[in-house]
Image (cartoon, rainbow, N blue to C red; front, side, top):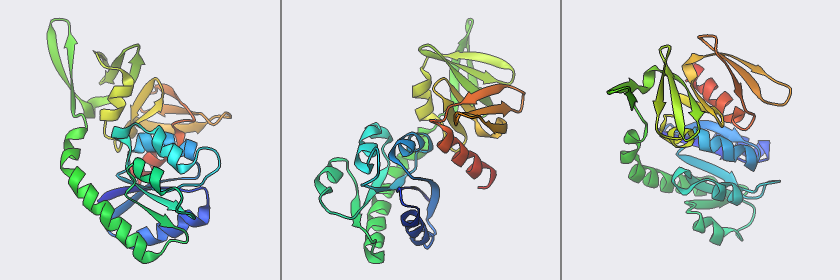
Length: 242
C-alpha cells in the first residue's frame, strides 16, 4: 500500500485527483493540503510515500515547498501544473513526472506506474526505518526501553527525555533527530519541544491562536503548535478510523 498526499490550493482540483486515486486499491490517501506552508509542515510529519503537488499556489509554490523539505524526507512527487515551463526545476527536485491540467486519466495512470516502480525500489529499506526501542543509561546500567511503552518525548537541549510508564529516561539525541526515526502512524510531533504517542491523546481543545491544548490519558497537558496541527489532526483521524 502506497501512502499518498495531495497539495493543491483548488478544492475542486484536489477532489478530481482524489476521485481518480480512489480507483486504485493499492493507494491510500493520508493527507491533503491547500497551501505550501501547511503542506511543508504536514508532509514532514506525515511522511507519505507519494505526493501530488500543484506547482502554482499562492505563497509558497509547490516547487519551493518540495525544496524546503530535507532531501532524505522528500517523498516521491508528481507535479500538477497548467504549464510545462517548470519541467527543468521539477526534475532537479527528482519529481517523477508532471501532469498538465486538466489531468488526463491515461497520463495519470502512466505517472502512477512510475511511482509504483520507484516505490518498489525504495520499499525494502522502509521497515528498518522506524525505531522500535531505545538504549539508555540509568546509573551504571544499560536499559532497553520499548518505543511502544513511550507516551511522550520532550526536548532537553541537545538531548531528549522519554516518558514511559511513569518513569523518565534521558536519550543522548536531539528531539528533531528522534522525530525522523519514529513511526508517524504511532507518534506525532506536536510542538518543537514535544512528541506524543497518538493512542495516549484523550482530548484536543482548540485555542484562539490556532494552537491546541492536548490532554493525555494520564492527565498531562501539552500545547500543540499550529505548525503541527494539520498533520496531528490528520494522524489522529487515521489512528481512530484506520
